[in-house]
Image (cartoon, rainbow, N blue to C red; front, top):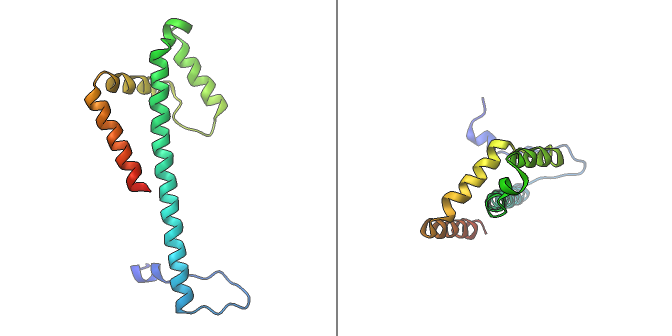
Length: 129
């Protein structure tokens, strides 16, 4: 079983003509920390952007009056079309599309709640970058 000290000890992939020392180990650890911070920022940005996309899709369903315009099957059709176009992306199920619409309806009618949502999003993004 590995203890925490073993996890921190760097493992070197075999390389020719390499003479690692304490300075190299410190540099390697800094590069790893820097890379991990970037990966975390990318993940947070992607999550924020996904939330924004979901909000806008919910808005579109409401404002376009999609069901009245294209029929009650429009949300199901949109789900099928989006899953066909992006088979590796999760989140376009029929249920999720309905949730997007409900989420938009929940927040659009209450300007105080909507403002708080925007403030939280801005604060979230500010902390990420």
